[in-house]
Image 1 (spheres, rainbow, N blue to C red):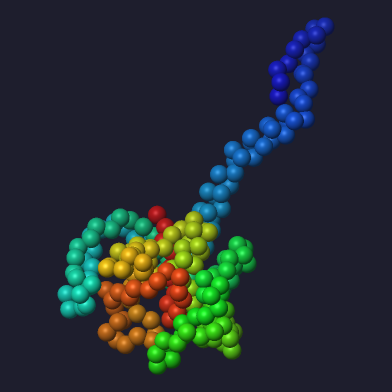
Image 2: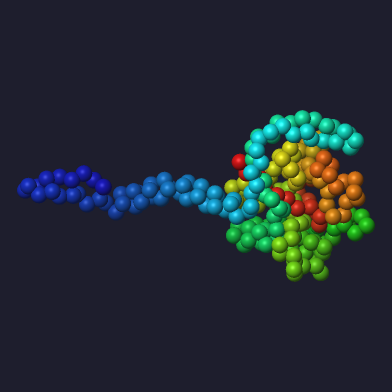
Length: 220
């Protein structure tokens, strides 16, 4: 607002031009926008049952495991991690809110395990085993046929991130000796007992999805 002036002993305010009013409103809007975003992100992240993990030193790896599971000690800063994997219900809400399309949907093919890995036309997160499958009765099951890139998009949308390899599972870390791949920790329902341990490491390209691999998000 422009400053007041005195005229005939009366206080008179100079009318602010319409363009000035619009500029003033725009400045106020963009000033408060970051605060609204922070509030939205904070409340959104709280919807995912994040468990607080205190800082500490962890012994990682397996002395009896594969060559890439060498036992080591790592200092892990405090962080929060989703108690469970992202569900089909949560991923569907993300897709509805963002319009996101997964990498598997874009390629039209997903990896399905049936005695061996098979690349199946029409397999995606809505049809995890192929076009004749669906999510009926599975909305609260972990979403699968999602890639590391899809996981990153989901987590970032809600103000979170993929965990590092030291933190958990479907991770943001490169696979040792193959920087073009991402590390996956632990095993899925199709793995043999040897793979069902947190030290076990897979390495997959970041754009592919599988019908036994989901993800979680982490946050500070």
